[in-house]
Image 1 (spheres, rainbow, N blue to C red):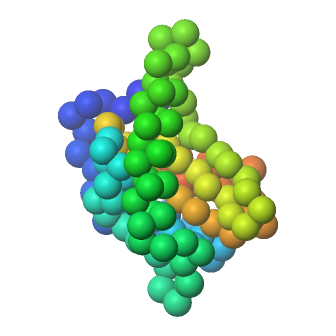
Image 2 (tube, rainbow, N blue to C red):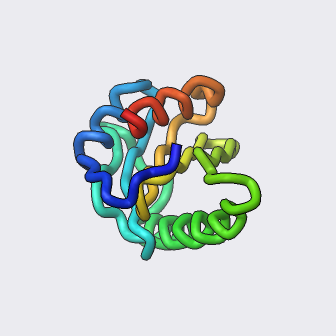
Length: 124
């Protein structure tokens, strides 16, 4: 389902809903196309694995990666979500208009079910 460019999202509400999906979720945030966090954040009482400066770099890199993926939308269709399983975390990103919903969970979270639950909230 393509996002309608004029669809209005409740970013804080979406972040809160996604955070409730699974206790293994560490972080839920909305990143704009310039790599800035515009809503959301870490789960309470969860220690970040990286510094704030690292967050800024990671968000800018994510925004660039998402822009580059869009180059192939005409050929393959829109990317519904992207998933990276790292040793310490599971990272999932999906579109919200021109912005990005970025979710980081513990590496042992259910990477089969979690993206589908996130998309159900985003597509609602």
